[in-house]
Image 1 (cartoon, one colour):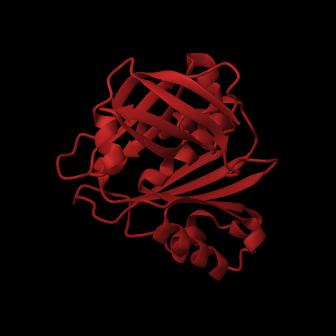
Image 2: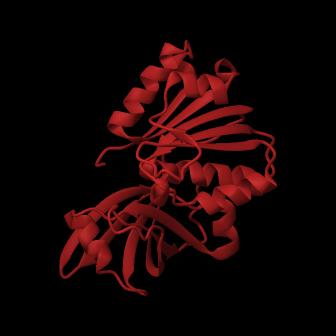
Length: 240
């Protein structure tokens, strides 16, 4: 684990919808000896107006992007919490203390993966999929992402590009509150959707990522499909 002081390079808005909680990515300059694996997380310590705040976030960047561009990134919903209020006061060049990396939500010699995620839980899978695409791994990935509406599909352009470059990646979306124009799946992830889009589900390691309630429900779902518990990895976002 590495602890280092760095500074904010850029804040990238990811959603523009007025009725949804905004989502933004925060990019910090990486330190050369901070090496992480796709799917891991880090701790961000900031000080704003004399008050100190600490929170952990999954990397939404891939190690390949960090090596090329020199920054690490987390992406978060800007809810009305003390930490998120403090984040919104940060400006380019402001300092932060980072501790990294942590977590075992990583790909380790896995040939077939099924990812079930939703909302902000897409950040760690985005890191994993980007890494597998950039390094041309043969890992076969099917990702099912459940979110609220079309305006909540941040990173969709990234995933579209990844799929065009990676024949081993398939991304499926299902929306709980879509507009009438939406032509894809509707509702939450369920067993029927998993069986249809991941027919070889018994052969896969499942990566479950999102809020506590969602990860709990998805674990029950895959266990109900007779997927062994040893084939399940979880990354929980406890404050959502």
